[in-house]
Image (cartoon, rainbow, N blue to C red):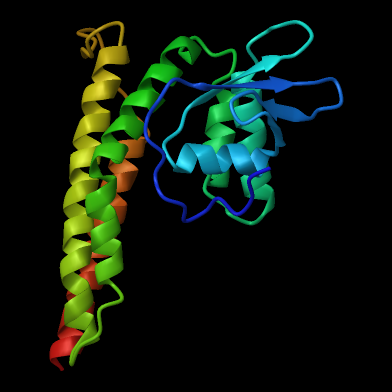
Length: 207
């Protein structure tokens, strides 16, 4: 059984590995002919290897539930990736009229993030670069992250426009009531705050 998968080299892409789950909750990798854990499956994902999980008795595809278990497992280890506010919003959308479009929206948002992931990693790594003036050194990567944030917001706006069944139009009979701030507007406010903080850091560094 594989262990300590983090940091391993990428596995060449191939057909999905078939994993069977038995009544005793044990997971069996049919490719390696060995039992595996949720940690092992998480490591496969990080290495770029896909898999599908079937119930050994019924033959049902239970990949989604196993992936959900992996997320729960990771969160229980303190690797908090999902903000509480996001989880509340996601739960609130179950049974909502927009439930059917949420998966597509999330796929589009995560797809855009994945395309920019390497650039964001480089920008984040640059934060650790030392120098005579660490505040000025840190300003440039923040600027790159800010630009990526703007690109992501534009992408989310386009995605949300696809999900709107009717074009927004003001009622001729009475003026529209001010709408509550959207997620995009809140993100813009956070970016503006980040700009002000960066400006303060630059001034401090020059001083």
